[in-house]
Length: 124
Image (cartoon, rainbow, N blue to C red; front, side):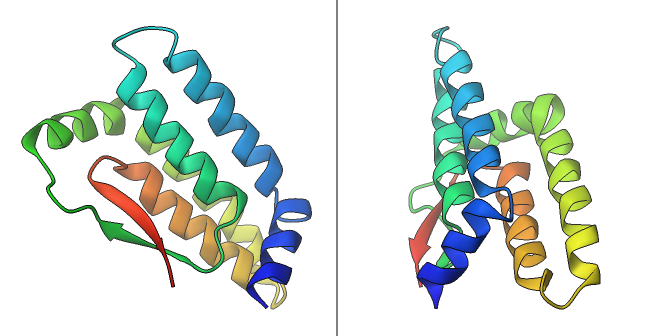
């Protein structure tokens, strides 16, 4: 069931487009030394955006204070906008019964995009 939902997500739910956006953003951020940590977070989000079903967000072990500072910077510069865009995509999907699982995945992505440092994904 997870495979079917992931395939439907990639094709119909916009997973491929969202993944490509995160990959392009990550590549652009990795062009500078300062942007590399943020680019790595974009790559992490791209992996979750491509196949989100069967994954959950967990706190990464050994979170450090630098991650907190980077989360604040990420939140101010990009996190809020990415969060709002995922919520804007989730709301119309939540209207129909068929779209509810996709809306839940957009909310999961929104929560991860809000503060990605110190979080990771694991298979459920």
